[in-house]
Amino acid sequence: MPIKKLKHNPGMLYVMPAVIAIAAVMIIPLIYTILLGFNKSDIYSDAWKFVGLAQFQELFQNAEFLGSIQHTFVWTFGSVVFQFLIGFLAAVLISQDFIKFKGLIRLLLMIPWVLPSVISVSIWKWLYHPDFGYLNHFLKMIGLTTESINWVSDERYAMISAVIVNVWKMFPLVMLMIEASLQSVPNELKEAASVDGAKPIRIFFTITVPHVSSTCYTIVLLLIIWTLNAFTFIFALTGGGPANSTQILSMYIYKLAFQNYDFGMAGAASTVLFVITAALSIFYMKFIMKGERR
Picture 1 (cartoon, helix red, strand yellow):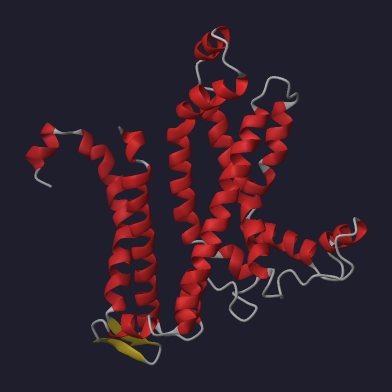
Picture 2 (cartoon, one colour; picture 1 turned 120 degrees about the horizontal axis):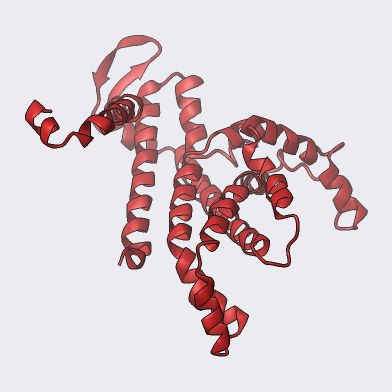
């Protein structure tokens, strides 16, 4: 950047370290990965061989890859919907005046979020254990089942089990952000609406919800991006199994790169994941958040 421009805009000097750090940590690896997707590269050869779109074509003819895309959307939709709904309801409940010991409740509810992901998954693996897990014991105790359920090794329940862990882990963050936004809602508007005869439910939807909507939109966008790229929960809980029933795109990329050592295909799959994430984010911001920006 020319020195004259820096003199006229000295604020750029303050953001340049952050820009350089982002470029080094995110932009350069992203460009490298995209280029890798157009080149054949594996552990047996140091040189890249340009193959154009051949690897992308091979991916979209691969049933396992297409299945991982489907699993990714199921995983993302189920996680984001329940993370937001439970977090929102928890925030609304804890913000009510009749709730006592709010500080303690917040502290206890934030424990899942502050725990390292691997520890969280380890706890749930014990809860899901078919022989010793408390979940099966509880279901038998209340009469919902008479046989133990293999939560993480049965294709019917593995994805649901993974989504539950992800929701449990992330809903406290949603709760915290929405509760902070709820505290900014002017009490004067609520009191005025109450004087005019508005019922509490009407006050909530006409005053409270519009004031926190911008926060809600932002939270949902972040949840979508985080969940699409999530890896730890699936890797530690199911490893993508059983029979690839929980194999999402990030897990499929891991297998290509670090089990098959096919770095070119892994780069192509990573590029597809990046395009999906970017497309969904742009669509969300353009059409879902469009009214909010106005």
